Image (cartoon, rainbow, N blue to C red):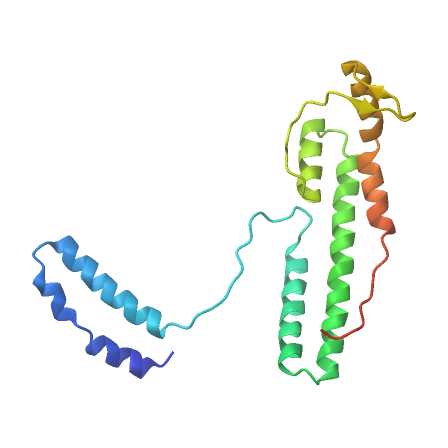
Length: 187
């Protein structure tokens, strides 16, 4: 911000327009509008990302590493031909990816092992993490393991219970088995 230009604009602002109004509220409003316009013109603009809800497995250290990765990418994009910058970015990218997977997997493993959490809360957290929205619908019929169509509510409940009883464990074991994919090409 250029301080001298800012001061000059404040001196040359049409402050006398405030005197045109009788009401104190109107004067204050006009003064505020003039001042805000000058400030917006001279204040440095900064981009930032609004985050909705923080993920339960996200730590401050992980967020800082993600910010370092982002800054490394910005530097590498500025100097496209600097292979050292791209190498640093790729290293940080792979580290962040691995740490994210590890943190997420650990979180769900601990959640699955926690005996005290109620089932409804468990599924709510699991669905939030997997990006599924809560959308309750009545199930009228379902295919059994043999392929037969089942319409009895109790049998449907038993089939679903059998399927979902191991979903959390399967989710954790799948996320642990996912290999890290190293993408070595420059972006």
